[in-house]
Length: 212
Image 1 (cartoon, rainbow, N blue to C red):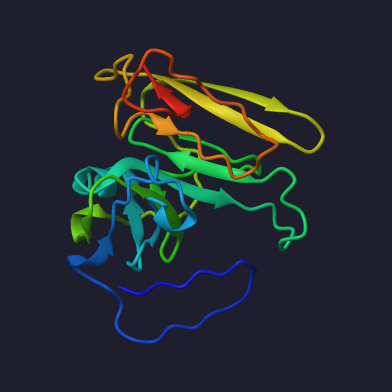
Image 2: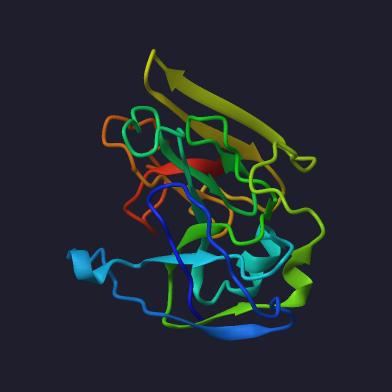
């Protein structure tokens, strides 16, 4: 597969037949970046929704549980065109819930057509997209949630904002639950509000989404 990413706004035109059916041509590589922390060995991969319709995050993560860690991140842009980013951070979603990145964007249950997002590789192989993951909803950010108890906690001042999401749901444990708990990806070094999972030895990370 081939995708395109841009650091600034603009218009792009694509021609051809819209994607349909199963797509399994996207290869990802696990480098174990925690043990080999170099710029070339990142386990994060830039993915996207290849369909002309919404992509259901939970279905996508479930179908790719053998390849990804069960979490997606989207950059919550402040619309400054790259001159600001004072309050910008990554919005995130697992199958348990989501957090905002500070500019009002909350990762919806469906990711819009052509929307790019980050995933973290768990094992090398190929990513699978299929029609069962598609949804008629075609919005990138939408504050519609399932029937699960959630508490959002946030810190803010005049220029910075960050939040965490504590989720109380069936099936979650006090250990690290892949696809439920969400790792905090610090896109803004000035922001560090997160949950420190002292109860787990499975990962050496802090969380932005904590399912209990």
